[in-house]
Amino acid sequence: MKKLIIAGAVAVMASVVICQPATAKTFKWSYQGDAAEMDPQARRETFTDAVISNVMESLVRYDGKLKIEPELATDWKLMSPTVWRFNLRKGVKFHNGNPFNADDVITTYKRGTDERSPWKGALVAVKDIRKVDDFTIEVVTHNPYPTLLRDLSNMLMFDREWLVEHNALDPIDPGKGHEGYTIRHCMGTGPFKLVSYKPDDQTIMEVNPDWWDNANKQHNLTKVIFRPIKSAATRVAALLSGELDMMYPVPLQDIARVNGTGSYEVLEAPALRTLFFGMQMGAKELQSSNIKGKNPLADLRVRKAMYQAINMDAIKAKVMRGHSDIAGVMMSRFLGGYDKSMDGRLLPYDPAAAKKLLTEAGYPDGFEIELVCPNNRYINDEAICVATVGMMAKVGIKVKLNSMPKSKWSPKVRQGKADMWLLGWAASTTMDAHNVLLNLMNTWTGKRGVYNPKGYSNKRVDELTDLIGMETDPKKRQEYINEAFRIHKEEIGAIPVHSQTLVWGVKKGIKLAQPANNVFMLRYVMMP
Image 1 (tube, rainbow, N blue to C red):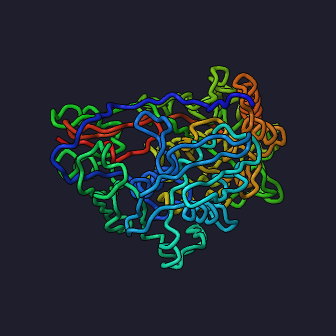
Image 2 (image 1 turned 60 degrees about the horizontal axis):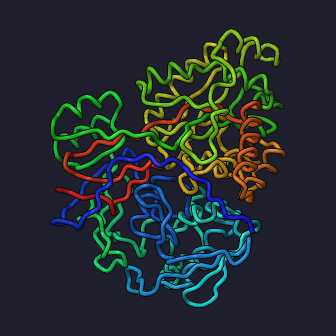
Image 3 (image 1 turned 120 degrees about the vertical axis):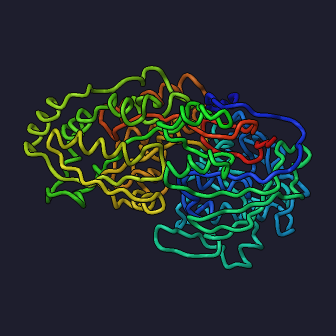
């Protein structure tokens, strides 16, 4: 058997303090949006999963330096190229006192991979998870799968008895209007317990005194209060007035102001997330266009025109104030599998060339299209879209901006109800190119191309994704990755914009981890 190669990633972070906890504190923090719900299988959204992961846990987890380490599994080994055996941690109890065991793992897996579940594409390489005994499971994959551990880090464990008690064994899809107990309630084995969750208002957690890893605890918190504050000005004011101990993102125009207070500081680091414009090029007809009977986006010349109409340098300089890294492809240079050959734009910014391409494609007067954009998900997300609308107008493409909160924007994109959309992707589970390909660049099947509905489709890219998923030779794997991203780039399967930076504001004296995957882990917060 070949030696297993786990695709790596560069972990960029602020300081992590490792010491014995001091006097316990209440920690107050804020973000521009809220966790969408308390069910980790209701959607796949980084911030929502990050909040829940303080309450629920996986078989494995990332440490403060983004290295995989044991969590609810103590160890694992390959029994064959496609069978992994995991020994589960004994003596772990859920917050309700129920013991954690193999039945909880099996139930969690079956619930999340149910055909009705929005989460079903998260473990597409897994064929089955089977019970050996109460504290041993085996994960069977379709093929050798080098990034399995990273994928499993996102499978947060439910207590089977708790699900049964609350009639919640079936998956829930909020995008389809589903309701259920797990939308507002959460219970796990993690370092913090959920006390209350009031959407768009306040979430309160308290420390779990019976957490299995308390002997290695690296925080001194007893209570955590989270408040979503959409207004950037209000969020900064709350930090500087002492109402908050930490908040993010800090508006780029306020970085100097926060640093100049003497009592607060801005922590900034590169991030894994890359923003891009997705396009519904696979539909026969666009939902929002004045062009009927055909889809302008299906024509490569139109996509090239749209690409050349966007001035990425201006977005970086004026909208992002220099705090971004213009993207050549749809993944950050800090993800495993990135290669310098992927750098740079495919085509230069050139409005005149864009107009010529539109004329050649049969649209001399342009066309109309709607752009669906979040207004509380990414740094200056709505401003990026506003700038793009103006740039498109200069070449004759009339873009109607439809901006909305992320709770409404995410299901609209995932369900194929947008013709053009802004989306960011960090691949924060595997931190690897395969994650990007599988979710964003593969032909939509329900489990693949989850955020590519009616979008880009190329048989060779799909084939390469499968090869990348099972290849353990790093050189050959990189060749496959480079080919797949080159094809997607040349066919303009999407329009990459930039990778944003992490910009967090914090009261001086507080120590925390700021990993590149933008997952804020409360278990690393130490207050003075």
